[in-house]
Length: 239
Length: 239
Image (cartoon, helix red, strand yellow):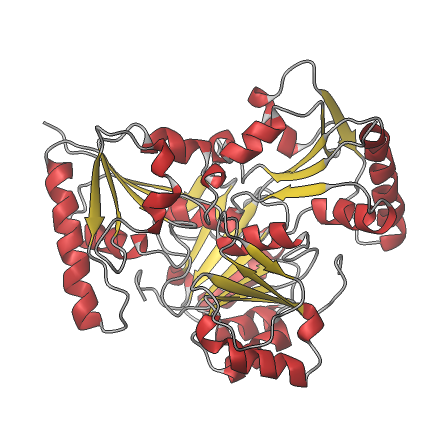
């Protein structure tokens, strides 16, 4: 019996309709769908994005893949997740691991991919890209992310302000992902430079509860985890 | 009679199956589909990506949107393209402008959007994001574009080597789009630093003629226009 194939599918930033045709076709063809658990131990956000496309005969595997910085905790979890999926794959079942956004863009799929490449290199893998959140944010804002000869930098928002300052010396557009934890200092920093008018915030991009802020809200109220800031060095839309 | 709605739809990097479900639904619902002309004056690459989804009753408008640096040539062309689509829109017809990749990521849709926002602000606009080429390239390479706290920089490859050097001081991954014109100096630069093993080339990403180079080909042979280089500062897959 031949082994199954492992797919990594980016399901897009939140709107179920932003799944690709290829993602849908594969998602509906596999007997096993896997995704990271949420904090309550249930199948996480990626599975809620595509819930309407799943059928009851599919097995849904919620994998324990903790969001902590310590590699000593992470690596055994990734290894165990890979082992669990390997059971299905070695029984001949195809498995689709789904991930919000894109599968190569700050995605937990990277960790699984690494485990399989190292430990189970005979398993065939196919990666299906998806729409990542900065693209959907620009669409919601009706503005370009980048155009012409402009340079784009994307930073996960766990960096120092000095890194943001440095990035804005060289990039025309800087996107800060998951900005919640650093929103207040970033807001103050933009305010001091009179750049608030060139910064745009999108919460829950493309989801049913999306909020688009063309004027940044002052710090104070709690932003959701999926909040993204776009800073354009030039306020002109077309460069 | 009410005016039509203008959609900007990113149709993905080349594989027709990388169109989103939303893109397909809208594309098949509109009477008019527009896209930039190619060099022969025919409907360009975006229309070839989605050709199988179009129906014969749809009007296909190939717009003259030249790829030249001179704004004196560009701006009248964009204005004329907007005027042409405005005729359909003011006749009550919905129009989908299609663009390869994503509609906000180095896309000609940005120019049309600017024309409409300035000159026809009463026209309703909706932008549908799509998969951009760096995401599809990482998928084809079976590697992360970025992971964890890494920083990504994307540059259209019309920059000086000094800009690339600068970018690699701060970004973990640098993507050079349309690298053909600067491939030889970039190759030599990577070779001098012994970084050739950390650079990856994808031609015609996700298309039927996609070529993935995990080892960079030496300069000399002509690369296609849609060739993209990914440079990872760390050769490790998972950072």
